[in-house]
Image 1 (cartoon, one colour):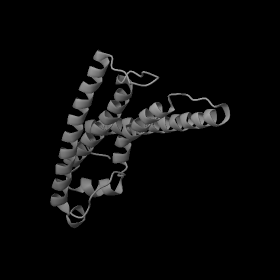
Image 2: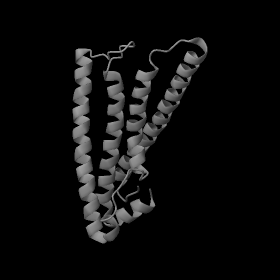
Image 3: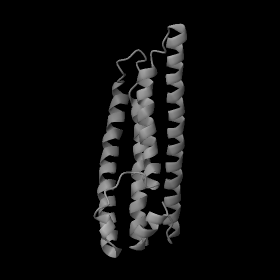
Image 4: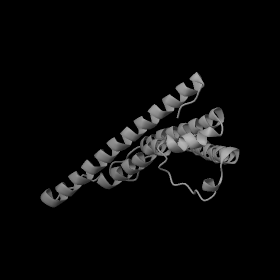
Length: 178
């Protein structure tokens, strides 16, 4: 995304970098999960032992992979879209529909981020731990999910800014420049 306003351009670039960093961390989480599961398989198969944490930490890394990759996926146009109405609209009508969708998405992301922030704080303050062998402090995996949700929120807000600053041509350029 590129706009004529220098400040807006800088903000969009920062959000794009954050989204790319989230995607890279998502890849790291995938690698960690793969290695952890492989280690569990090898230990059980050849040594009759277990890590005792593979199931728990695989779940945490799966959530990390999903949430850390949300912003990048949105930026790349990889989220599922229902296009039956969008395909039939052009110009200002399409532009206003995109703004309305981005506003609703932004609102949902902001509210979810606020709720998750409160949940992380509560888990941290109460010292809540998982009822597993590892007794993982729950604020840790929750905080990783929060980071991913913040990146997604910033990405959708950046898209909204792009739509507003760029005008009706933004939708067509976004569709091409994904």
